[in-house]
Length: 179
Image 1 (cartoon, helix red, strand yellow):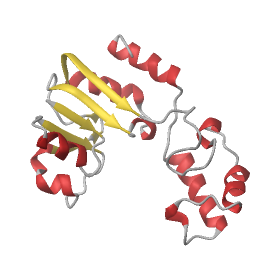
Image 2 (cartoon, rainbow, N blue to C red):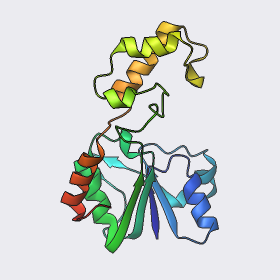
Image 3 (cartoon, one colour):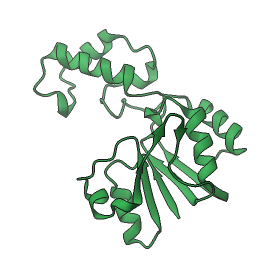
């Protein structure tokens, strides 16, 4: 039994179901018209926030995984405890994410070294890359100042980069190990 933590549109869950896994997904927002969710809505649930809780019983999953999710979550103390709670004894948590030192550029906004500077990348750094033509595809229609502000907003509010060492420390505190 597998949980995709931060499942987005449900594509991974849909793929795992095709492969024969008993797969489920949860996220902060679920788009009912997303292909994976529309195909199997009973397999998807919204994450609760007050208190932070995964909407599944304790010891439900053999595997909890995520792909490019944890760098957006500002509550590692909460989500790690919840992941541990829903894992069966001996279960495995696997998370793929770009870390603070991911190179050559921040993978969401594609600004070179922006994640390296996190949390203090100066706005002039975004402006420099914008002016030399490094634009995110979503920013093509924006003026350079609007695009810089969009980068700034995402950087300040959309990501929460921890170093690998900090991820390991937090994981060891909750799970007792980290590889």
